[in-house]
Length: 440
Image (cartoon, rainbow, N blue to C red; front, side, top):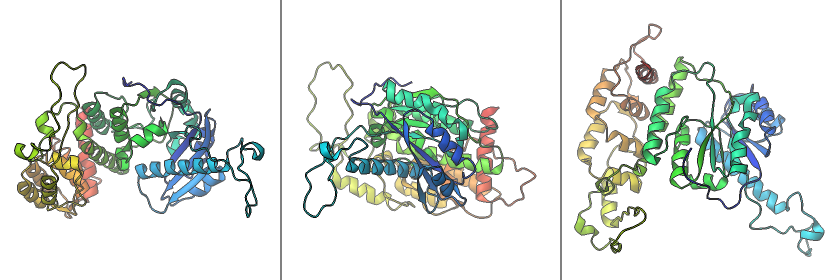
């Protein structure tokens, strides 16, 4: 476990279960029923993330609080929606005065025009519920998440992560797991056993400190890094949970490719947190020392210190905005953050722009993708993409995934697949070849 201690002065006493779900009509009812058997749980929220089956109807029939996304928005968005719905529900409970509300004891005086009592709304209220995130396909095993709830409610843990036993039929996850594990260790110094475990119990204070979430399947990696760097206590806890495993078929490979893409993106967003960065890495925004002279804070007093002084970074607004405007000329969809601008500070933007535009890719890159690609061999990536048995252009997401596996030999084409391949098929084969290489 991590070495940080709990920060919250008061522990939650109740837990709200949040279940992101897509096309889980067959299992969602059993998952909800099992989750209700967890001691401390008094609210179950299901977020239907664009299902095309009866997931919402079955969940409502199981007496869960259900909200539905009209289209699939991804796991991170579903988690955020569920947490928001819990907060709205708690606000309504406070407005009603709660189960213990008594008009004689708690109501404000009646006023003319009002037909009912006016509850006294306590602005402090009770400690918000902890959030327990469960996979929708856990069915009857969901109640095995009890040790996570006990750790948060009783031990002072801020984020309890489930350590799952080996899952029947699981295969090929090694490279994504290792990528996430190494990234978390580099950013925080803590090495988790199961960095992609999505079953987590989290205090609301910890959850709010980790917002905004990284998109898609990078959310677990981002949550771990943000919680640890904010000083919260993160602990992995064994739990006998079981869910449907991802297989080796094409669908499974595409799922792993999407996971890897999102994990890489999440790590790129947190790259500035890496503990082994030197001062010159942090001060690489192409700023002259003279420009910083008037903006630097006064020097700290000399003499021994009993702790490491926090590195500071002062940005000259005019120069930073000029640099940001230059970066906007890249094939990018979105604006670069301050951290991303600093990360690209010593990069030749004209050369990077030419290399990116030479890639056989349709569409622009996300800012964090460009930060990641700037540290790769883009000429080798271009050669790999152009040599692939694919007629159409790759998407920017495909390019990022393949870039993360440039050291892997070209994948072999199964006899069951006919060429030319689609970009999705080729990318999944690249991930599969990397997995096989790691396992050899």
